[in-house]
Image 1 (spheres, rainbow, N blue to C red):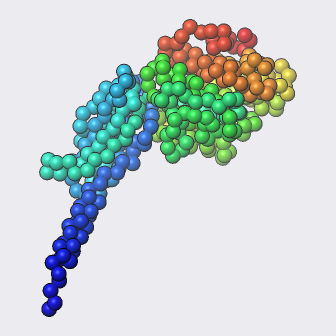
Image 2: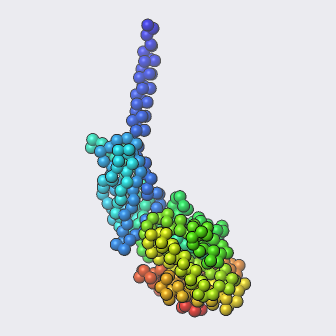
Image 3: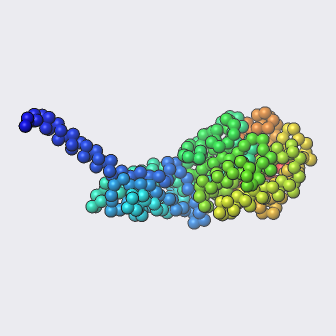
Length: 369
């Protein structure tokens, strides 16, 4: 038998070692499926949340552990040390880590075998704060000018798959312009010192009847947007709609009854009572006051009957001072719109709010001011 040259033997042995090493590395990998980067988990009444942690370990381990560290510079939140996460023989793991409201947190996971770390993985930013689903028509979506962007890095959008910094146009909303939501997010984050997430389910030129359950595409999309965050995963739905109903001459009772039906159905589908904040939004340049008053009265009925909380009142924001084209908001309009949403939320949740200015106070129910 012909002998293999020593150099080839050494080379072959090196290949075997490298392959074995590569296999060993590939064998011990830790993949996180949940939470996602920049994810905001809704805080509960105890001002904390159980953050779901799940994924897959490729390999074998004695224990999988998770820990949360508060990023430098954030004053609200509390680190959590290494905590065991249950896992199965097939490598799947799932558990929860209870975190105080605040963040951003960094979430670290490790797999250990024989007292040594064999695999690690990390989510750089996850927070516990407030999640809102926005719905309605164009002034709830991306028809403002100019586009807006949150200054606070804790304000994010959810696009249905990932969490992204809050920069317009908001994913899920029609149009390619600006919205009030990054500005509102900045105010909430500043007031509450927590991360804030928005998910849009808005579409232009829709009457309230177009959202009726169970089969309308708009209702299905709204229910899916809320359901994506899980049970008790949404702080509130922020509803800004009504201009098209003024054009359609919808009566006060019809408006109230239709939106009440939507709210009731959504609560059933979501599995919990989702709070709603309904704006007073009835103005359209193509309508007359009697038509607008009927829609505004329908929105007020929802407040009076405690079907929904009072949201921003935007009927008084009229003319070139607030609207770029007579319908959609300009920079001052968007800023004032956001400020009025914040005042409405602060009044309900007893948040500290700065003294209201003429442009950001919550208007009386008649919408004048």
